[in-house]
Image (cartoon, rainbow over the protein chains, first blue to last red):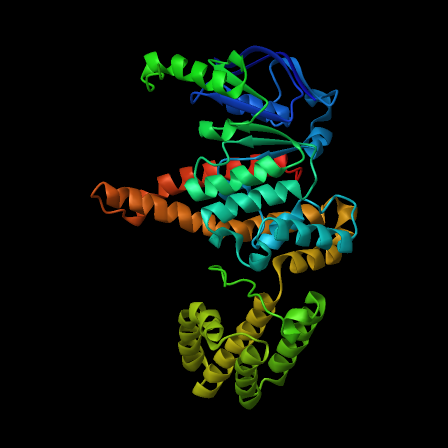
Length: 233
Length: 199
């Protein structure tokens, strides 16, 4: 359960989050909005990467202001650019590095790494240089590296922005199969079909909160006068 | 193989040997060769090092890739030794250098970075008493290695951006865009590390 309680946040004097209050308990939650609408800042608050200027963010009852480290162990985060999420030189090492302080034995770590590499079709690349993978494989690696730590919640900030249709579909399939609560920020609106709830953010506020079809329709209407496509009749 | 000349996957004897044992053998072999101070020993060491590559499951091209960056230095050192001493000393010193680098390369190519870092953490353990955190130092080393391809990518991107606009990206013009690109990558990587609990 995620709870944002009257949060505000500014960068360089510009308010990017403007009094959002919302409770997110559904299994699949989408967040859409124009560039600069505050989506990424809000997503980073769910993992304690950004602490709100005012208000509070509670993850499973814990305040990100006080327990950011513990919260990061519960909330995994996947970024748009997988390249910057890769830390270690080889695929297996990158998956493994997140478990170094987990308290697991070497054998348990090896088992987990093997399992997640198999599950994400990366077992054939385990000792290969991670930066030489394809873009789709890199994003799968980023997802695998986060999921190996077994987070309860997964926040994905436009994970398919840099991917082609085939790789987008691959990530979409992986996300839909996860048992975790997923908060997905995306510009690929079709990915939200079947989601339980979709928020539309606009200028740091929630402009709409509801079912995916209605949210997409609202977002399209919102963008039409700003140069977006005309909504369908 | 990695573009930065690191680990090559394999299951040969050198791949299976522990990192510590390989480093110890390297230390003993190079020390013995240097202490012998003999031309024949140095040439034999080069030959042995070259032969060890295929025996350890590494293709002959790895020998060349390991030695190639060294050639200019070897040439300069050779000329200097010839001038300062004699031809035999020049050949011996150059052979010692090539043999040492080939043997060290053999360790690097058959050892994962994580294994090397784990060894480093163990060896640097006593430094904890003077306030040094070996895990942090090891992570910094790993990131340094990881960032080499990022630097190459930033350089390529900047050069292509110039070319796309019909300009020639001379090296001094690339400095600012490459540094800006690297700072952005560093910020994003730092954020990703914090998000993954590696902070």
